[in-house]
Length: 245
Image (tube, rainbow, N blue to C red; front, side):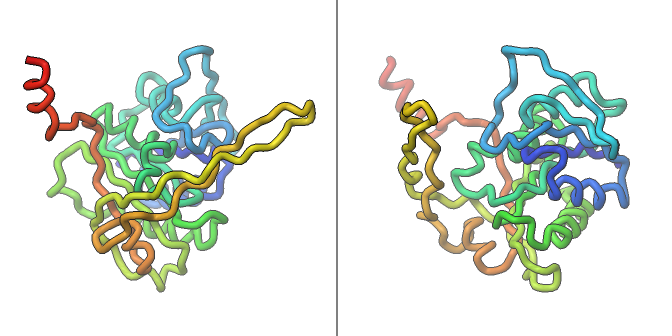
């Protein structure tokens, strides 16, 4: 099996190191990741400047661009093979509910999915890398499962509680929950006295009932959500056609 590993926390993040090490126990692995933290970059591609690929001492390749850039470059000329799977993460912090729209971790997986390759994004629920080795072990076991019942390519979003391996209560197939509106921006001044803004925290969970990703991880389970890229609002399509007639 051949696996391309990427992330949005950068090639030095503990999450991607742990993930790549676990994948290497059973597969041929190549790592192509951003040179620095690119959290919240979503599916952006860098089109206004050239990109450079570097090789780190540990064999990882890193790019001065976004997670999508990394996977795109790897799949369109940077890899000596076509991977069987794209694995992204392990992210420092959850990617659940509305977060998935902004996530660079999910975006790296999505880029592979758009090339017709099955892809999985892995995240830990809390920041700080607590029990990241347990999360990496769960990721390895998850990748080795039989997903023959899923249409290919598939795109899966996996969130893992920061718990010891023995305390994880299993896997749950989930849907995305929903958050309240984001908290207000944080206003401050730069050294020249100009007003500047920091994006505020994400909103609290609004829809976190049974069956959601929020509910699964709150109960000590690994949340697994199948994603799709088609943004068409099919339910409104006929109404739109009628309004334009």
